[in-house]
Length: 354
Ligand SMILES: NC(=O)c1ccc[n+]([C@@H]2O[C@H](COP(=O)([O-])OP(=O)(O)OC[C@H]3O[C@@H](n4cnc5c(N)ncnc54)[C@H](O)[C@@H]3O)[C@@H](O)[C@H]2O)c1
Image 1 (spheres, protein in one colour):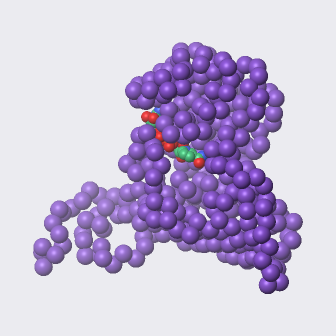
Image 2 (cartoon, helix red, strand yellow):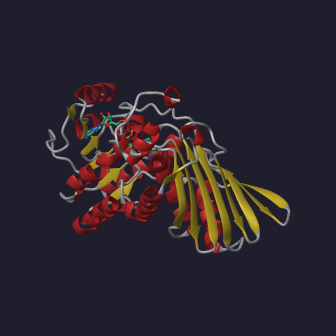
Image 3 (cartoon, helix red, strand yellow):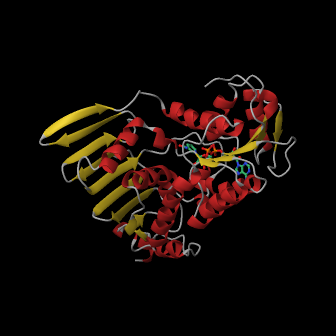
């Protein structure tokens, strides 16, 4: 991206890992970014240390009272703040780029997209996996019907949690929910985008027991396609996708953004769909697009309203979620109480009462 010209004045709300990895490296390509970015974090220490690290002049702790007028906002706070904070800026008619997940519920997502369209403001979301060339090729194969209709999809998405979160909200704050929303915001969006529609939830199981889930399994259905998704924060899963179609099977590694494989008529074809790039490169491409949109130089590659249906599916999966069979907990009354949302009833080991 050319860094010629002036950077629009941008408020970055939330100064944690996502801001530091995805937003600020792009904004600082502009020579005047130090005066034109305002950092906001509920933690003054985090705002100040980020300001120091990126040599940014303006920072504050409340997005409702910024030290300078801005042209746009980027929301990189924990999930449950996205809707409220995005709406604050959208209601002023300002363009907003929000981190994934777009919102916590279908209602939040639609309140944001509807406000954006009422105000004529662009609302983008960082579902940058839509830019991966391998994923784009899968979508193309399915939409052209080159392999016939899709019968079955399996996706495994799991690694041991190791993201360098500044606040630790992912594991500590139940308001943000767990792995299903966090990883599902990408994977379920990609699935809906591939299939050209949002599947229905057939069954949903998590290990939440009233808290933050670390494992989730979904069964979904879309027309004649059955879909199985598995998510984990506890361990590395296969991190693989497989789409069985009438005349062939598409396979790929979830985190190989460029290559995939098609098997048809007993033959395997390896496809290099695009250049090998890092995660950050793709996220930077989308952030760059947002900056150019605010400057009036580009159209959004895609908008938040394209992603919104996947939030509805995730909400439905939470609503229908049951527990895995965990017989080793059955004898413990605390588990039943926590699952109902009560506080724990007993500190005693169930074995103590026998
Ligand atoms: N697109 C992606 O692949 C991707 C990758 C990582 C994170 N994210 C998203 O970015 C968001 C932030 O994640 P992170 O990893 O940077 O978290 P983090 O814990 O590293 O940082 C969050 C920051 O927000 C601040 N904060 C909390 N509540 C606030 C509020 N009400 N107002 C202002 N600041 C507040 C915290 O003090 C912290 O500094 C999440 O929604 C996450 O899903 C997206």
